[in-house]
Image: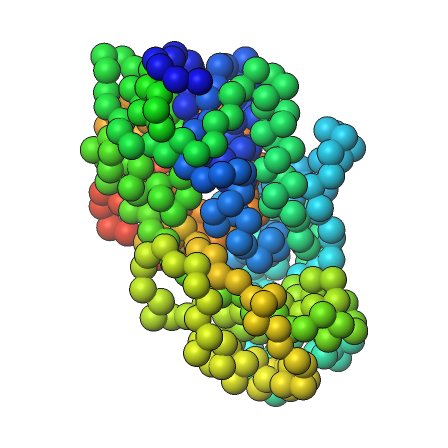
Length: 381
């Protein structure tokens, strides 16, 4: 379709967060157009993620965003008739003594919010994932944590949004945004769309999209590498396991083992080429905790890189901008967009339709960066 169009909402981005927003907005009766620069859904950071979901967080806001979202994934097939690849394969956190006391406090907070989580001794944890116990005080296990398929989830939401009348347009990069009276005018590909609301769900490109509208949204890409063993190397299915001390994490994917760790000096910017020298560093740190990792054959063809869409405090930017009515941010999830996408879509719809929320998002609004920046939410893997 070419020319000039009008709609209630333009959602910029067809990743997992944008797809969730599109469905929730269409469900509430709004006319929605999704503009995606890439060739299909979940082709940016969503589809290149580690695809793991957890509700084990040290703060109430992340717990609620994640646990409510996991329950949506858990019930998705029963509710909507579509599978999204959710498996409660579990999440094991191996905790050193210096973090053990605060970690136990976090467990109590998680339980108060209804999250199932168990505290394990070292021997019990080793029966789940074998590891060297030196320097480990204990472990926690989230039996409802696990994995989801971001391609299936994004595709399901977009299919349901289309059934409700939404239009989804691929290869439509947003190149211009301007305020036009009480509306926004968005140039996407070869067409111009007037709308009351713009939802900025552009992931790591969220800052660039916002800049077109004259807004400063501090979201940047940060590369994350995922390394893989050869097929058949993972003879035992292992859940997502994080060595909290080193930051190395791993899990099985079919008969492969995936492993990774964030590179502390990774420069900002969109890059999806694999950092092979960093793999050596990850293996060096990983084999200290998981000695058997050194014996597994690797497969370069099975490795990939994606990006986190990071903010300075590792919380998302969510909600309408106070200085730009009708501009609603839903980006900057800092590697947690797959986990929290169901709630992101719900909260955006509540913001636009109701002006009220089932979860207080004050701490997530863009305006928090106008003053002193908050500390990191912790456990940023």
